[in-house]
Length: 96
Image (tube, rainbow, N blue to C red):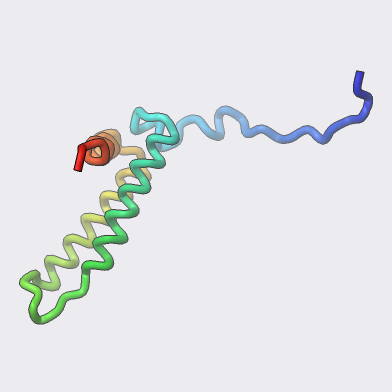
């Protein structure tokens, strides 16, 4: 029998991890993180492309709307919107 006392690690209560956006989206945490990373990648890609130049046919309003769409997409995933998460995961699983 071991007599030395080990410091017990505090394990988060189930209530602290349950009810997250992954639960609202109806997926496990890892799948939700995948969808979130896709949304972040889309948002960051949009921000890189938002460089209106005179040769660009898109208006500054178009760029603003695209940026807002990307922000809304990420927000929906972070809130656990099941339809948005499912849409991103379907897109990710398509062969290129």
